[in-house]
Image 1 (cartoon, rainbow, N blue to C red):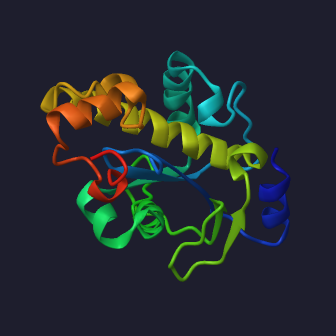
Image 2 (image 1 turned 180 degrees about the vertical axis):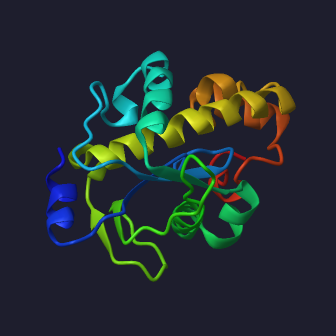
Amino acid sequence: MLELENELYNMGYNYIACIDEVGRGCLAGDVIACAIIMPKNCIIPGVKDSKKISSKKREELYDIILEKSIGFGLGEVKAKIIDEINIKEATRLAMRKAVLNIKDKDGEMIVPDFLLIDAENIPIDIPQKSIIKGDEKSHGIQCASIIAKVYRDKLCESWDRQFPGYKIYKNKGYGTLEHREAIKKLGPSSIHRKTFLKNIL
């Protein structure tokens, strides 16, 4: 699972940031990206694609990953901007923000010298490689996916308190039948992506 990273270390790169996003297909809420730099040859037992791990396990791994990481950054793009620039561009923007936000445990900025990205390209002047199904092939990208997922799930709990009735704590903003019916009944909130609701309203 470290083949991609080790190949880059052998080429002379030292700070390899692995990047993934969560919330791309949601009807509501921000799209979130994480960029994380893990130590060389670091394998954390239990880490895999965040979609394949229980919520409880993700939260346990979240603290372990951050403790072991060299540095990480998060990037957020809100629903209003997603509607303005489309979800693909919003995802790339969130990823770019995440890279620019990477800090170590002392709060010092870290500029990575290579990016490994899950199935995307970022508009930034840093060498990078897009990995199809990267969250299955790179341990670092799996770590990034867990951090992004846990962070966004906490946001969902906050959004649920702000916008009761949509059960965002339960559906995480995704288009479940219950969520779609709530949108029809209540109308969209300010965190709903209006461009995603054309087939519902």
